Each structure stands twice: as C-alpha cells, then as structure tokens.
Length: 136
Image 1 (spheres, rainbow, N blue to C red):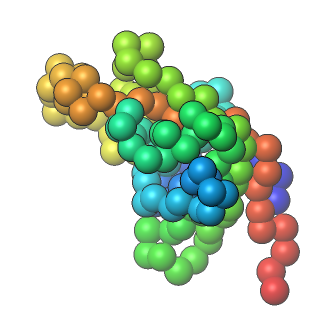
Image 2 (image 1 turned 90 degrees about the horizontal axis):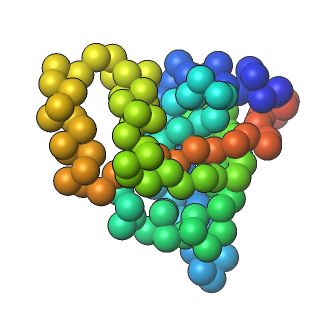
C-alpha cells in the first residue's frame, strides 16, 4: 500500500491503536483518534504527561493500526517518525485536528482552554511505511 492510499484511510477512519516503545523495547499500545493534517502527516492529540509521549521523547518511532468504526472491515498499519508539538505552538494544529475528527466545536474558546488545562500536545507522524500490501 502506498503512503497516499494509507493517508486516505486514516483521513476517513479515526479509531486507531498507537504503538510506541518502552525503555525495555517492549511495545506500549494506546487507543487514540487519528487523522491526517494538510501536510500529509498523521496527527494525534494527547496529554504532555502520557507514557506514549515519554516513550516518543526517548525514541520517536511510532506505529498505528487504524481500524474501521465497526472494527471489522478496511484497516491499515502505518509507521513513521514523530514530532511532538507543545503549546502554545500546538494550538492551531489541535483545532485543525478536532475539526478533521469531529467537525465544528460548539465553543472554541472553551476547547482552547481545555487544551491548556489538559496540557495537550500534538503528535505529528511523518509516515515512512504503510500496509498491508497483500492479504493472506
């Protein structure tokens, strides 16, 4: 599967499991909502204090298995290198993320305040791999 085809799946299907690596090299998996930004990066919102962020600061590689809303159906696995964007730089990216995943928010001021209160960061995954390339 090429990267553009994978991006189109992630842009439509937002349920995913994000995998990062713990210090001992074992996987740490987290359910997340993911989408694709205007630059073609897969993006995820999370808290600055989350274990996945700690793992990514040490090793910026990540993988996502993106599932259909009904679980069974089309899915894709993508991987790449992550850039962690913190507030205040992350705010407009977090707004864009929300719009792509859920549409318009009823109160953007409240949303922005929540992002600050929750110490949100934006994970930007620059894709380097996507699959599956065959069924079996």
